[in-house]
Image (cartoon, rainbow, N blue to C red):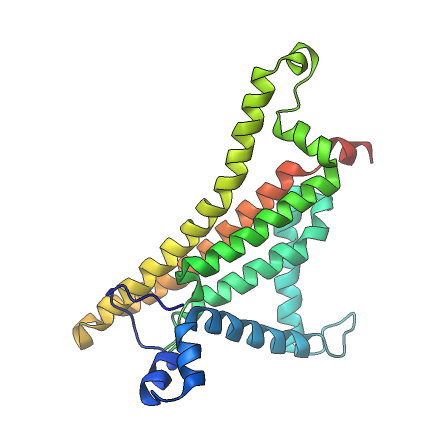
Length: 252
């Protein structure tokens, strides 16, 4: 839902329509859930682009859209595989989708009458929880339930394996680390994007005098949007790499 904190915020298309038609229940509902509404709008736009990009597929891109998508996909695949190795190719769809989705939501706040959904913690926490559960699923699938517990306990061997305090301490420590990751991952993204939106709203209030600073901050906002999407996906890739069965990869 929209947060009424008294902090300056630029009007967006949903807030304007809700104010213009106060009796419209649908517009009021959309405005109350504007962060989710804008995130779904991004999904719709990306879905339409993906539909046209996937039409008439061939070895050679048939148009500029397909060529652009192919470059983006190849770049994301190189990024993931550069960290995880060849085994990371099957994680490219998940991580690549996250990057494109988060980047578009970040950049949408720089478009007039739009808003960055990632400025809301409810959105970034939902994304971080998706990463959390996917990492746990991958770990159990790769290592097995007992193997994952062994991984969390620090994979103690020899005499250390028969002690109780050290494996238990490592198990509790790693469990707490896993639980803290979604919070830190979501707050990092939300804090940076929210801060950019507040700063843009403040500079916009200066009128013409604030245009140079506003233009500079918009450029910095584009850079911050790319960096924050990259950091989110970089950490996701690292979390997945940490739970992969590297011994099995070497044997293969």
